[in-house]
Amino acid sequence: MFKKVNSAAYSGLKSIGIDVEINTTKKGLSEFNIVGLPSKAVDESEERVKNAIINSNIDFPEKRITVNLAPADVPKEGSFYDLPIAIGILASALRFKIPEKSLFFGELSLDGSLRHTKGALPLALFAQSEGYKNVFLPEESANEAAVIKGINVYPVKNLDQIIDFLINKRKLKPAEYQNRERKEEEPEFDMSEILGQEQTKRVARIAAAGGHNLFMVGSPGSGKTMIARSLPGILPELSDKESLEVTKIYSISGNTSPGSGLIRKRPFRAPHHGISKVGLIGGGSRPKPGEITLAHRGVLFLDEFNEFPRSALEAMRQPLEDGGLTISRSKQRVNYPSEFMLVASSNPCPCGYLNHPEKECECTPRQVSRYRKKISGPILDRIDLHVEVPSVDVEKLKKERRANSNEKSKEIRKRVVKARKRQAKRFKKEEIRTNAEMKNRHVKKYCQLSEKTEEILSQAASKFNISARGYFKMIKVSQTIADLEDADEIKADHVAEALQYRSKM
Image (cartoon, rainbow, N blue to C red; front, side, top):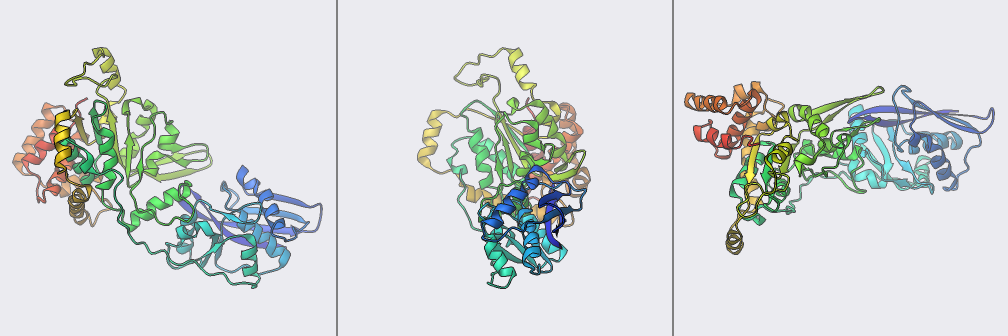
């Protein structure tokens, strides 16, 4: 007997329909074969499905069973084919009808229960776009899929429950639509906790307002890490569209927790400098998202920037410029987004105390030069804002701590949001959201400079040997400074300030 069950898979972030075809016959010896380019995890479905059916007190059919995952030329991986395979086998054995316009998806435990399975949100989005009415998936993954309107998301605890539903022995209620409400949360690190460092905090505000990349250089303990970790607290909340993008990435990569819904907090990723190129950029024989994709629409913090593998940093060039990357393998080609704010920090020298007011640097000029050359010029040129983070005097720290007058992240966020709204209005007919995303044509179209300002900019570019890319980045930063001041055109003092934040290394 032949049965077909609808499911879905993903290649990169793109979902594709998968027909799980099951054919059972009494001829020949009892066998169980899976074909259609299955991975090891899919091959092992045989044992999971067989034991789940037996432990659900259902007789496993002693027949020759062939499972075909179509289209056969698309590599299949993951454990989410367990449920559709089990449903197809039992539909043949118990002779019940599989509901039309329905997708089945989920990993089975040996006892017949269903586990939280990655990829629920992409499945729901695929079901919505392709006109499916019902989605059956593990109960712990239901909230993730229930943020999509127009489909019935059925949370399934175990194989017994769904089989009883399909043979009309019990009812199964669809999950309630998960309202995409925003809950205001206190930031983990507040800008008011950072004492001193007024200029660095100013640069952090500019970076947040325009989505600019930031590089901080300073001695150990000067506050670089704390400033980086405070950035998510002053960034605007994710929009609905951005939340779906981020949740989809985290769902596919298996980074959503059971029972979770839509991700509302901007991602903050801080990988260790021992990370591999594949871990940072993404890839592998079966491509997976890397840290730059997991930081999409959020912040990627690379502490000890000089210590990261040079090959990994150089591989970031194209994603930093284009906001995405393509990973090509012999069997597949996947696209991943990577629109993130890069926040990097470094010591000024190997010992960390070059130009320190109190501690003496022990490094030779050659050691300092070699240390700084670990970061290439092209990478530095792709970072919009460069700032030196000085050590703060203890007496000043005492004074500020007692005064307790530092501006809180909530207040800073209001100004950042206001600047972002100006940008949203400016780019309403474009596909970009922030000043940092502008291409040269956008700069020419939207950035208004007076003749005097243009002249100052040209002189600065010539004097400091600023590249063409650096020239346009200065205009973008100047535009963000103007947006923070609610100015309609870029003024000379905006350009002068932007010039301070060019590379010092």
